[in-house]
Length: 219
Image (cartoon, rainbow, N blue to C red; front, side, top):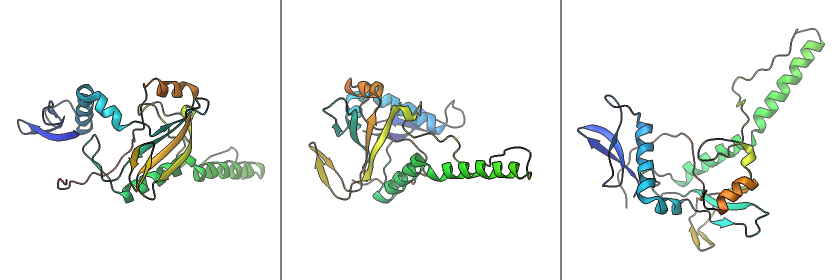
């Protein structure tokens, strides 16, 4: 039962399932479209928390707690998510590759290192009076993209050790994994892994931006 579109007195909004409250957005309301969709999702957590949590369960956890390892599904193809949206294999592949490029971030690190070196050489040669670093078109934050509840993005949460798209349908620990599914393996910090073992954190949730395209409902 995903987040779905609704109307209240002709004003567009989002709600959870058929019976949820319609959270309107836009002119005459105090919400943006993103805020209305988030409110509907939070409503869903209150209505069907256990069902939602099961959709984000890890496929595998290390039996040896010292490994602090989990393997889970980030996104499966052609399955409607909790926001009432879906993506095909190609879109998932592009998102996964873009994510890993950002995580590795080698290109920007090399650019910064070269910029520092070049600037020092100019100072030594008397061609410049101070070190200047060109950070245009760079991801200067250099953050590794593992967050906690879509916030507190910090590489200390864990280390990505596996990232791949399933090349075929297969079964893992009794779970059916569809071809094209994005899977992520992480070795977590002790603090984060304890949250996983306690059930306080139950799976991955992808964050990002994209262009939504209206399609006809399919079964």
